Image (cartoon, rainbow, N blue to C red; front, side, top):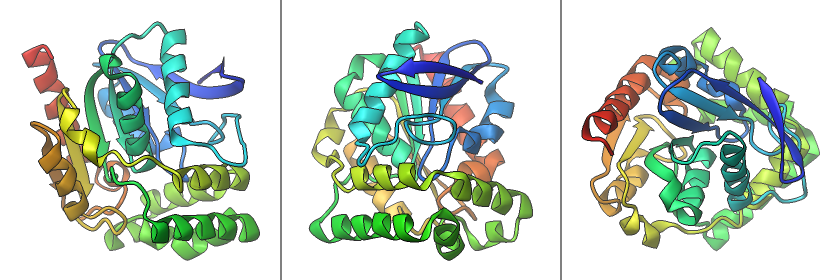
Length: 267
């Protein structure tokens, strides 16, 4: 693990392996450890960059509202510090939305996109209000009660019975600072709608979704597949919102095939 001061905040990250760079962007309310199964699988062939986003994990940078495009800008500056020009972006949930913001601002720096269990739509008036109320709830009761009441929504029923997966997820969620979770949630309430821009994505794109995802079901990801030229959608059976943790072998297989194809075609 290392730290760099990025745009006024001390960000924690891992830089492991060697080869073509892949930047993994975690979701909410998680941290970079959610990608540990991908690190063990891919670090011998790729250079993996795994940051804790602003305010999350061991990173600083909490505010009253952390916008997603600001987090994307943090990542661009982190890549500058690491002297990485172009990168494969792999983001899950909120991380996928940050990846879309990154591509909007820096399309020339993205070699390919991997978006898992995410949604390109902006908030409706109703969903915006719901997200703000959720942020207020987290602030009022803390992350432990929030986790106890909502953890079952994040993973499939079989994963809830998997002690390793459940404990890792529980520790990540309860270990997230409530101020950071609230700030990011309030930022997400103002997130940009990317639907109309999906047709202009001009890099190889892999979409992944768990078959039991309650937040972003396959139908949501199918909308993205239809709009992004040449995008491929992989639905992973038996997984919920976190297939990279719940069914890592299937997730890694899909990602491995995608990355290998990029190497083969030279894109």
